[in-house]
Image 1 (cartoon, chains in turn yellow, green):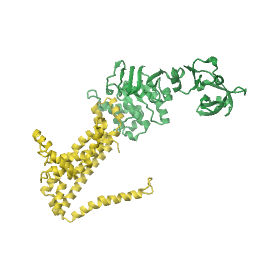
Image 2 (cartoon, helix red, strand yellow):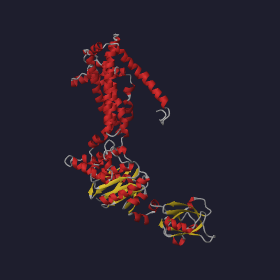
Image 3 (cartoon, chains in turn green, yellow):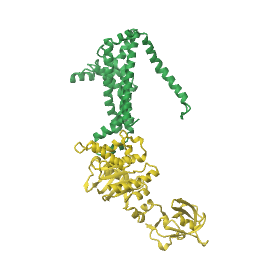
Image 4 (cartoon, chains in turn yellow, brown):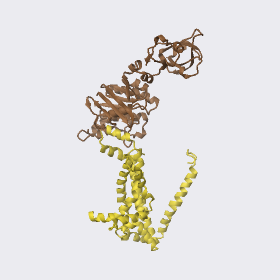
Amino acid sequence: MARSSIMPGFRPTIGFTVAYVCLVVLIPLSTLVFRSFQLSWDDYVHIITNQRVLSSFRVSFSTSLIAALVASFFGFIVAWVLVRYSFFGKRFFHALIDFPFALPTAVAGIVLATIFQPSGFLGKLLIDVFGVQVAFKPLGIVMALIFISIPFVVRTVEPVLLEFESSMEEAASSLGATRWQVFGKIIFPNVFPALLTGFALAFARGVGEYGSVIFIAGNLPYVSEIVPLLIVTKLEQFDIEGATAIALTMLVISFLLLLLINMLQYWVRKRSGQL
Amino acid sequence: MSILLSNISKKFGTFTALDNINLEIPEGELVALLGPSGCGKTTLLRIIAGLESTDQGRVLISGQDRTDHDVSQRGIGFVFQHYALFRHMTVFENVAFGLRVKPRRERPNNDFITKKVHALLELVQLDWLHDRYPDQLSGGQRQRIALARALAVEPSVLLLDEPFGALDASVRKDLRQWLRNLHHDLNVTSIFVTHDQEEAMEVASQVVVLNHGRIEQQGSPGDIYDHPANAFVSRFIGHTNIFDLEEHDADWLQTAGLPTANWQGKIAHVRPHDIVIEKSTSHSDAFVTLKDWQHLGSLIRIELVKSGSHGSAASVYAEMPNDQFRRLHLKKGDKVDLRIRHAHWFH
């Protein structure tokens, strides 16, 4: 294999890759798996089927899913605006998009909690006008996750939109397609795989997010408690077995969901001739 | 359908791309817009298509003012230089696109679309590729698919932007001939843009020569070659030797076959095949030496220089058939006499 390869440096790079994957990914994760083997199956089921644990799973995955969907929608629009139009302050907006990447998530959490709490600037407004309370509810979690995950969508969709050949649009128009048909039949199908990647990244980030969520969520058991918080709580109570069991379950579910998204992506690309 | 352009002007910032263009294209012609890069030919094509707006002027297609119509409403077919095929669709779906996006009332049913697309693919001889994606095709195949796609909506005018520009030489030659034949069969008014004068002369029935946003000349290929309207057209179409009578001394011009008595302007353009060469007999007054020659297939191009000069300014090129050249028994360095049969004179 190494001999038949044209590119030099196969051995050192594959060696490095294997070492990296082992040290950083496989060893920590397998420790998690081994650790959970110390539990009996019955103990494991008992921990997992606890009502509070189940609620937290429901909260975590549903909020992440909704947030990723919303972030995909708005992220696409933001990317579209940034690529397609030129306007005053565009470079400033560009820099602003990456802000959630750089900001410590706890800072974001505190800021969001401050403005969305019932006495806060936006929180008060939303309660007075729409009767909707954001903070200390699952809605607050969704809010925080959207904030955190939008840049993932924008930055994955943007390069694809940039590379998009405008002559394809012109060709569609010259064949009689309306603006909407051009968007729906030409632009969107070409951007969709990238959007799906952005969605997957946003979702994965949302499931694992901790810092920005805990301040705004209120962390009420059964209502707005997320899985990562529950794990930390268990650890703080020295319930290491409980924490590992939950963590392992989370790992498996996340893995399966990402696998599903990847398969969907493969299918989309295959169907549109990009593979 | 006929096309009429009146007073078309277009500026990009301070750059004038088109300057008051008036052009009439009769129905059924295959017209080449020819010119050097930056002359405005592509802009003009895009204005006819409605892909670019005009600053001033009207576009009439078969007598109707279409200036304010969107590209989707003009009933034109446009073929792009880099094909612009929809890469997420199969060849079949690419060709069917124009039929599928029609308003519901005008949209043909699936059977009709299938039949029509296969007929078009057979027309471009690529029906066997119908389930491939554009990325799996060669350049020449993509261009033919792009053409089939444009023809699917039965456009009244077919516009092609440097259709062979991105193809290699042998494919380009085949496609030129093929396009000419296709046009002959379909007889749809077609305009194509090119910077390659050979291509324009070979394919088009009418050639429009553009330079700096203006039309220099319009006519049949033969017309333009034999009767160039000005020095630019004469230089741009085919090869030509340029004699500036103010720069060269009369002795040299006399030797080169342009005696003072025959002058009809300041600049003389002479086609290489209008120069006759004879081996010089007298050594005293022969000024011209044969420097080198190149084989151009059936013709030989001969480079002649003024004896004793080193500058290229005094190089003259002549062309003649192979066997005629062989009969002259010329060697490099031989002195020769020239006779100019015909020249175009400009001021």
